[in-house]
Amino acid sequence: SSSSSSSRNRALVVEALRKAGIATHDGRLRALVLLATTGKFDEVFVAIDKMLEVMKNEEASDLAKKETCESDRAEDTRDAIVASREIDAMTDALTALATDIEDVKKKIAENEKQKKETETELASAVRIRSDEKAAYEIAKKEDTDAVALIGQAIDVLEGFYKEKGIALVQTHRQPDLKVEAGVAPPPPPAEFGAYGDKRQEVDSIFTMLGTIKEDIEKDIQKGDAAEEAAAEAFAEVKKTLEQDLKDCETLDTTLKKTLGEKEENVVTTKAERGTKLGMLKASMNKIKTAEPDCYYFTVNFEVRTKNRQIEMDALTKAKAILRGAEFSMKDPKRELKPGDTL
View 1: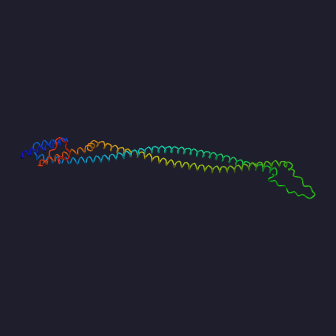
View 2: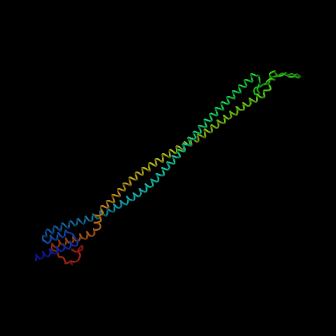
């Protein structure tokens, strides 16, 4: 009869939903079982359609979450690896920069030492040259004064002996004597006997003074030549040392510029490494935060999919039974699998 057929269908629907609920532990099916036992099949139809729609959405949502988790985890892991490698590279760069900076500082110190030594050498050369020139000027003045003094002495002596009528070897001229043949020459002047024997002595004095004067004049010439040579040598040394100082200053400027650039690179690299550390931390936190849900969806995705399919099969079977479809009896103790209701 119609009543017994309806009862039988209701029993089949209830059994199908009950088994699916037991297999999947889904409370929604148990609620639907209670509704089916009331015989309100119109409401059961509506409830089944809603539940099927919800499950389809859940299936799409689970798949999307699973794919998103896998994609995000892969991307975040890749970002973390890249950031970690970049951080390692920056750490190595900072270590290299620290070594370079120490080397540059050492070179700056060595250059500064060389500069001070060159300045000391130049100052010493200037002082020695100044002392040499002062000594030269003093010696030249003394020699010049001596030459002048000897000249004055010669002039005074010449004047003195001229007053006395003594002719010197340098200026003496024998008087013209007229000698007749066979006649003895006239006797010398009276004064010749008084001073004539001293002529040789006077000549020696003038010769000695002249020799001394000439020697001093030669010393002056030698001093002038030595002064000129010393001035030229000093000029060459001064030029070399001043060029060395310029080279030191140029090198100092270059080294300090290099030091500044490397120290700036340290600041920049540290800032970039800090940024990368922040990115790495953010990636790790993101992975850690997403891990519980992602772990659940990725690990349980297959189980949830299987259970959901069992539920959807049961719901589809229930709808078919309510529409009058016939199903063979299954072993009530056998575990339900997807497709059992088909």
